[in-house]
Length: 238
Ligand code: XBP
Ligand code: MG
Image 1 (cartoon, protein in one colour):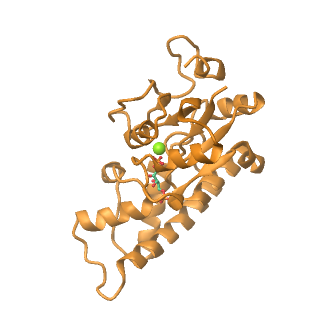
Image 2 (tube, helix red, strand yellow):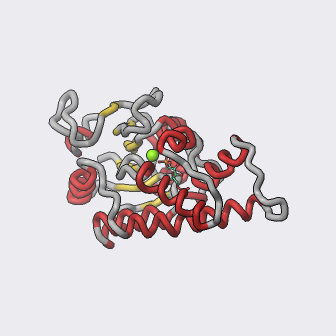
């Protein structure tokens, strides 16, 4: 049985528009900044993965002057810490559900002792908060490895995080199936040599270039060629 490696943001849950974006804006307000990332702008900023990297890109792109006497690195790190605090609060309040079919597939995989892991760009506490709030505390144990955030040097679309997870699991890329929602995510998995990639798109990613993906569906509960939904039996045919 192949190991299942899941992305988090956009794949397990639609966290970007009503989660991360809101938390960024709350952090900006708390820091006294008049920045506002509206839905459209945020969609463009998503091209850069990682919250700290996204803030830096925004500052550069709009030529924003951050107070002269502060160190930019430190400024971004502090702002991002505040963002993570707001994101955690939002997820803990149960604002974001899992996407259709996610709980079903995770539980099916668990019941069949399939090996599972996570490969994400987001901060570790964001992952654990989402999992415990949607699936309970014990769900953290369902995942053999959780690769998250700054654990690798280069975030998606670089292959580093998938390579790191494969290494930790002591498996070859040929033994894995990756679950992604974005072009950056598919590129990351593909360049880590994972050639079985299941994409479930969302509003932000539906027009992305998914070259290298095995299948592109709206969600895991969608009827696809050869199956009523994306389940373990179908995944084993890949
Ligand atoms: C997810 C991301 C993350 C979140 C923010 O990308 O890009 O950066 O938007 O998380 P993927 P942090 O789904 O491809 O892993 O602010 O914690 O970095
Ligand atoms: Mg994603």
